[in-house]
Length: 171
Image 1: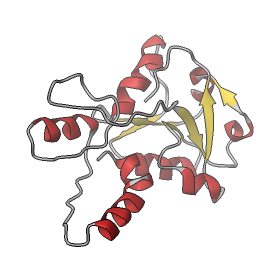
Image 2: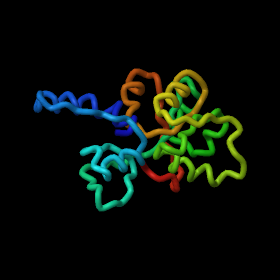
Image 3: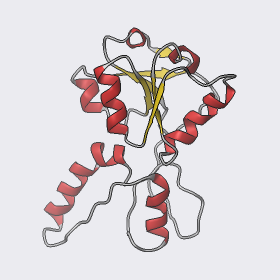
């Protein structure tokens, strides 16, 4: 499973599974979207939770959600007061960007490719949790869907601001 699904969905799902099938052992691997698809294709795993899986005969999509990517910031951040913003609005602040192995990296590469120069201050990371911590503890802006940040949003620790750029794909 990818990290955000592991945080948001798998705890309740595995609890329900064990209540229904108490003698079955589950092995959960948290990894990148690409690796989830490879594990399923090679029959090393039977079920996978991923974003934007490749079109392959060996993969069958059973459930799909269309999740918008938004800017994620601390509640006291200037962007937190807004309902929506454009990607360019986020460039005024330090960025925590997804590294290449995360499906979000391909999505954020779309608006990044439009820029004439690189953002002046950014960190690249392969952990959504680490990027959320940077946003929660400072003035960084990161980019994620709402999946996996529900508890932090409800607790008032993070805000999710919709990105209105039309060319940013969903995850």
